[in-house]
Image 1: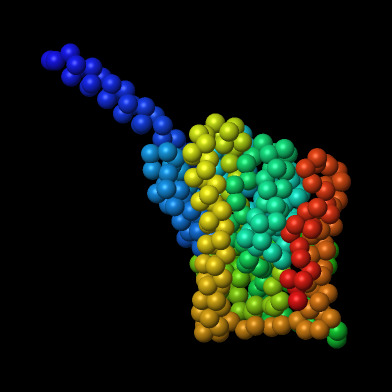
Image 2 (image 1 turned 180 degrees about the vertical axis):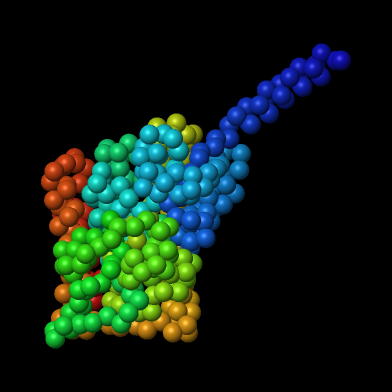
Length: 337
């Protein structure tokens, strides 16, 4: 073989090997089953990254709660068992109470990315948990209380919950217990269908979308308005993994996440309208609080959550942001009007 040709082959092989090694792969899991709309949103983000990052960065999805339990996922990403997790911040709220700023927010990721709120949350994640907060996905969707039986109200129009078997979780327990004075039964998402089917619970909080995906509408017949809170679904990345990525890989991940924040707001609002129309057509009844009862309900949802955040923040202060800083970034009184 011609020596120059041989040198060329070797050099080419080295170059090809270098290119092959340049593509980085990170692993990911998601909190909810694959069929749920929120998981589908995350998987669409993964597809966007893998398309834009071909030859540079790829995300390998290992599964959902069947791979790593939904409540164990935040610890798994912090410990480096997996590189990336898509999960509600409420699932690790004990370690990072500042996530309640998102829960009680009346803004979306679009406004809070622009005003520096998400950057602040990212810095807190890095300092407190050793995690990179890549993006707040699927924001702009709030929660309703859904019941099997027609809800009752007192003489002042306030919701009565006596005798209600109410499924709770970390997102809204402070509101349900401190304001509504409800007795809650904590259940993970995957156990709620059977709990409704067997009469273990007969009401639950849930977002405006996803009820049909989960088939809970087979048992729930009433939606109580107004809605409250905001989804706090985000993507967190192990900080050592993040810092070990090339600048090009980081840019692809971050730019795609920021665009997905925008895309998911619009997509999920359309999905909400579709779901409401389908539920209405199937006989779902809507019951609305009015006047002072409505105002008090919304105020209590926000203020009980802020109070929880403030108490926990005072126990473990951060150097990044204070309570008032977070409220200023994630709540705009004018947006309530």
